[in-house]
Length: 139
Image 1 (cartoon, rainbow, N blue to C red):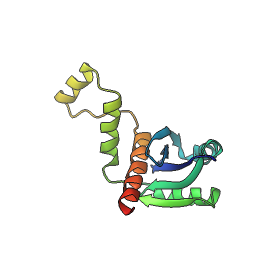
Image 2 (tube, helix red, strand yellow):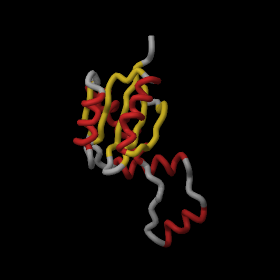
Image 3 (cartoon, rainbow, N blue to C red):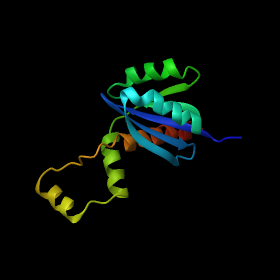
């Protein structure tokens, strides 16, 4: 029997962060795709993983993404998750995994420097983790 997975989405205005997690919150994969490539990307994910449910962050573009997902994956259970502070958490997680160089640290002290790297994939991962935390509290 195949394991079941959770697909988390961080919708944006032109791109979407995606993350696949197991129910122990272990990341299987994460990436960022353009909105017009989302459905093809999700079809690939569905080929490789048995997705039990789709979790969508309730931020910018959530309604549009939910509609797209419902139209293409009619059998899927979709849940909405509060997305507040996921960007900050995503940046902290990214910096934990990939620490800044001394130059970047210096730059950050001098000016209010922010990462230029899109972190929608990390945000999607955090959205999935928040959902799983809520599930744990219910049980």
